[in-house]
Image 1 (cartoon, rainbow over the protein chains, first blue to last red):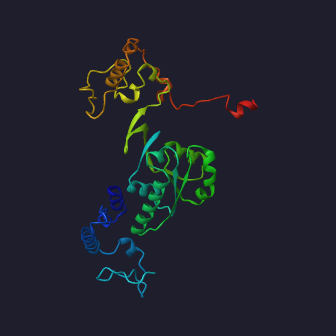
Image 2 (cartoon, chains in turn brown, green):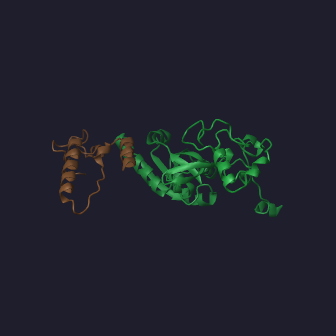
Length: 77
Length: 227
């Protein structure tokens, strides 16, 4: 996992976008907590810069659509 | 095996420069076993370069392919069309593989994706250690099968230097003293007397010091049959 995080950083992406957590099927509470925490973390980071780079141009053709305040890029090309 | 490490992505990006079509070529032999340049590493390198170039705003076409052995021309024939279509070939083979590609495809621009490090073996999962210096004049029969050329920091032939401490080399406490290992092994096998046969200065002409080396086997050469 560390190698993948290092590689993401070298590529230019935030290494916090990937994480591995070991949980057994009996740990539903922890699973929900980790999932919520990860969602919060990724939401705070915003859309992937890769998705921004490939976002469709605006109607005026002046560049990609900026991400919505909720981090949702909307309809993809 | 030949042990290598993959270069950092920043250096790979620098090596491929402004090329729009990049072909990453992995090798299915030594560098697959040491997780540096096999099919999986070639695919990861190609994907990483695609992602990084997209982020840099200069999207490239990066594909990957892996051959069984990059160091034999016969295995490279299958790459002819892909190499011809590429602006740059990024070889994830060892230094031999890179040069085999260059010799087989003289019109291609080939750059190395690995740093070829040494001849060695895995001592545990994820750890490789040097074992052979390819000196061309093997003396393992005199040293209990432990190589003082590759494993002694000074490549001494007739015993330790005196700088070792508690069985470890003075250059690094994590490096075992090769001569300590040799003496321990010979002692354990009741063959310490082997060391009484003092070794003359080594013939380094068989090693790299004699210049680039070639081995010719007339019994195998097709050209020899024709002569």
